[in-house]
Length: 97
Image (tube, rainbow, N blue to C red; front, side):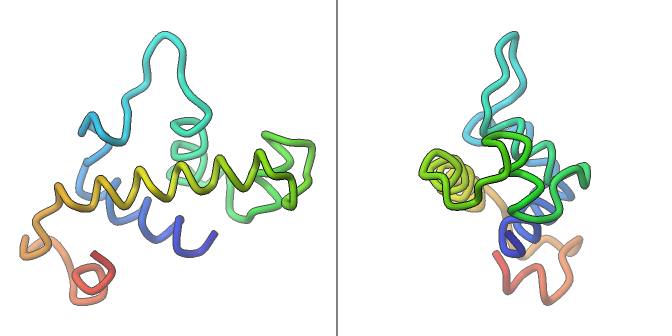
């Protein structure tokens, strides 16, 4: 969960939630977007928090693992749209990207 939180923090700082790859809220928001938003606004600070919200608290639930993997894959895809040499990123954030 720590890596996901760090990626969400960096990508949200860069405002990449506007890039369609990550997904924008629509009339029918997806669980992936809800998971992203929950991490970004601090609702989900651990796997247990997120699993409790989506799947009755079972972090070993295969559906939760799949959701987490889908979010991670979308975040990784979104990273390719970020220009890491932007001066707004500190050295740690550049290394994360």
